[in-house]
Image 1 (cartoon, rainbow, N blue to C red):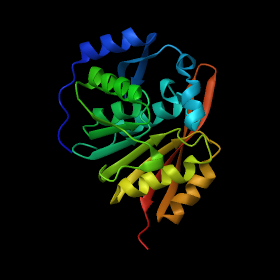
Image 2: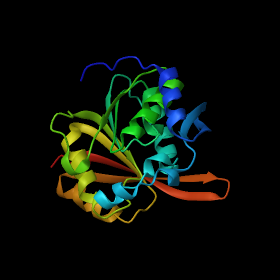
Image 3: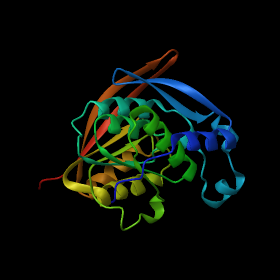
Image 4: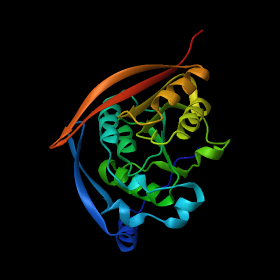
Length: 229
C-alpha cells in the first residue's frame, strides 16, 4: 500500500464541525495528553435506514474503555516500521496509540465518517497521516493485505460478529504476527475464541482494570497467535 498523502487537518476539522455537533475530549495515552474530536452524542447519528438495512448502529462515535486500554498498550509496544491494521477504528484511539509507537497504520471501519474522525484525531495528536479504508466484514476485500499486528477493541457485541472478526484476523495476520482484541466480556466473546481456535489461532488473556470516576470495567486483551502445530 502506498504512503498516504499528507492530511489537510484544518479543512477536515472544518468539514466535520460543520456537518456534526462535536465535542473535544481530553485523553491521556502513554503519559501523553491528547485531544480527541468526536460527535457530541452518538444517538444523534442513529439512522433508521441503516438499521433496517443491516442492523447498523453508530457505535463508532462513542469513546469506549476497551479502546483506551488497548491504545495505552500499543503505544508502548515496539511497533516502529511494523504494519498495523485496526478493525473497527471508530474515533481512532487505538490507531493513535499505534501511530505514537511508530507503526505504519491502516485504520478500517464500516462508516466513512468514522474514518475521517480517526484520520483527523491521529494526525492532530501525532502529525502522522494514517491510511484509512472502509471495510465491511461481511465481504472482506481481497487486496487489504497482510499485517504484522491486527488490533480491535469492543467489536464482539453481536453473535454474528464472532466468525466475522475471527475471519478478518485470519485473513490479514501474517504468520508470526500478533492480533490483540480488547473486550469487556461482550456476548460473542466465547464464540469468537472458538472461531479463532478453529482457524488455527491460539488465544491468551491479559486482564486489565479500567477506572474512570464511577465507571469501572475489567478489560481483557486477548492476544492471538498462529498455532505452531
